[in-house]
Image (cartoon, rainbow, N blue to C red; front, top):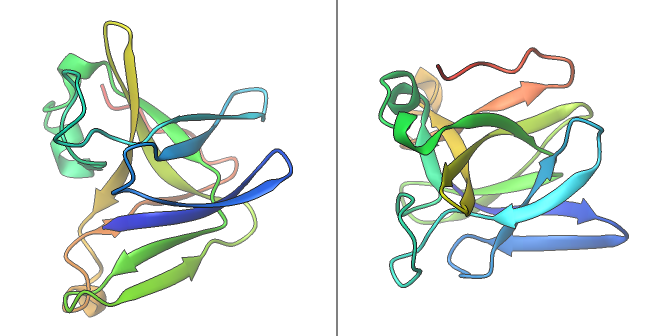
Length: 145
């Protein structure tokens, strides 16, 4: 699972890790600009949105996120960090025009972003339990419902 990201926001290059309760992810707006929104929810944080920072694609399609009005979003990061099954961190760069797939969840006035994950490819299954979903610029945003 994606545990950290590296991205540019305004003139700053930021490295953010999920365990930090102040972690924010960049979300690309329709006009191409970016805003920072809270990355998931931790045990000690108040709110009603799900704990954690990830949303399984199959759970989204199964309707498990429907009560949070899920909206597909693009996360413009330069690279992301995954830990292998032994706990070792590995950074992966995204190419030009690539984004992480995100889910924007809402409960009343609470908004949080979750990184969408998928089953890893067969050759990667022994290394990672889950993998991030990468989408391309211009790719039609998938609809969750």
